[in-house]
Image (cartoon, rainbow, N blue to C red; front, top):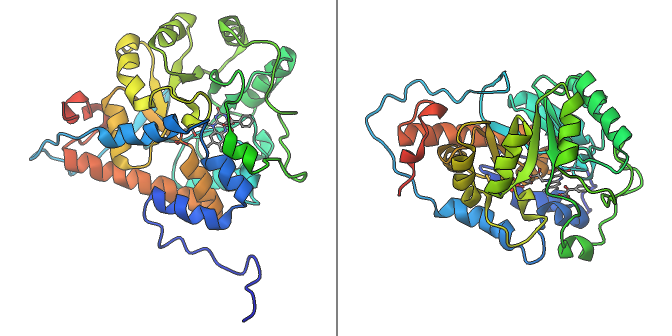
Length: 351
Ligand SMILES: Cc1cc2nc3c(=O)[nH]c(=O)nc-3n(C[C@H](O)[C@H](O)[C@H](O)COP(=O)(O)O)c2cc1C
Ligand SMILES: O=C(O)C(=O)c1ccccc1
């Protein structure tokens, strides 16, 4: 029998019905190195697993006989109306996952009406992504030692229309990544990161002073990505930032920190409505989105499923991952008796 030439297989997405299906299928479409890079967590992968387990362990308390004939999943964030609260988390190196890289991601975001947070380690120039965007874009920032470079990069992103800045604050160094190392991770020579030179090991520490400095010239809202400690959330409010993203970097940095959904209630309590809280980590089902909103998140982000959608089917794969999650959220709202996101409060959690 003749071998099937690479690329001759058309990727049939019709059998992929949920986000776990995409992960399982992605293994076949990615190099081992790329798959290991995306899927792996730090060290013993405890936090990676806890992100999922903690969401699974939360039970729901539905309300019956309410009118859910008109579901509204829309939410406003910093003056932008979004049709649903599911955002694309910043992830590096999309050309490792699909030849069209971030250009496929931004088309997928458009098709699914999703806000896309573009990584500093994009393998496509910010300008080219912006040109093709039909939905809002935000920019994720890794602050480099060269602060003048950082300032230029922020101003470039703002000039291109990126509407908010997510400063990643949980990565003074990458974590222990045994699986990544075992698979000899190395960016192929033809995959480049036009806005970030070199790996992420910096000498000059990023501190609250830098956050103030960035806010002194930033024209767009500043969010801190990677908050887990309620004291840091308090400090974030005091520093005047516009919002925070409760995140443990998808379990990729410090192993044995809690699941984000477990950290969320204390942070919600401490922030006490003073700024929007977003959350990522292990969101795979519509019920996960609903649980995060019930515990105080205004919106959620998804990381790994987007990478797997991209690998399985480019723009179409990204769109399908997001559409499945949106549809599942609508079903979860209908079945719990919540017609709007504002109606999703703690009473929907089985206490
Ligand atoms: C392959 C990959 C690359 C990532 N790259 C970045 C990055 O460049 N910047 C960043 O702030 N977070 C990065 N993250 C973390 C994500 O933004 C997000 O916090 C996390 O993936 C959410 O968890 P989930 O993958 O379980 O949805 C990355 C995550 C993955 C899986
Ligand atoms: O892999 C990651 O999680 C990540 O955030 C990162 C860090 C440095 C370079 C590229 C991606």
